[in-house]
Image (cartoon, rainbow, N blue to C red):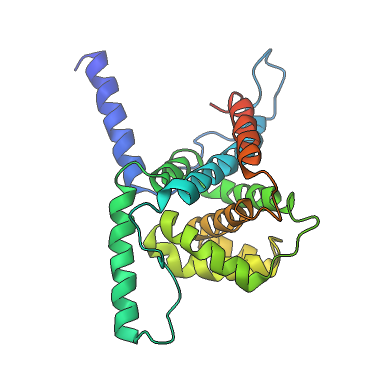
Length: 241
């Protein structure tokens, strides 16, 4: 097999691996802290910067989903069971939501973008750092705001439903409730659940922060805030990719 064919085969193999995994593999080599190599930065420094960049990339996917991702989806996507809704009707609605979200995720949607970031660049060891940076992004806007936890959860649930893989919905809802109650502080209980449910926790944090961007009483100019976030991700991304 020629070199070109080998490279194409390797790319196909890597793409197939990304499609079947949810988080990136751990680095094959230990992290180096040597930053003395001329213009190059160490793998450790690149990893630390990456925690921020990956968090911002996921958040940008959520922000895109908040603006565009609900097209064609029901207004009550992922809503809790209604008072006049039987258990059977609720189960049928959630099953339908699963199918709708799965169909959208195969069409190059923001959900697919977020999944690509996680499966390509975020190994399990980096998930806590990514969650910390997502939370920090929300805490930047909570200095003077005190959103009601129940209102916060209700607003973030549809965003979670649009971008979070359905198999993680239950765990993500639990983390969504805990993070809203703690005002994005990573408590011991949240950290413990994060270990067992890393993907769900990332999505819960991203959904809660995204909801803040839709509140003019919290972020007065969401378009400017979104642009500033994208510029930060682009600038630091040059050190990562």
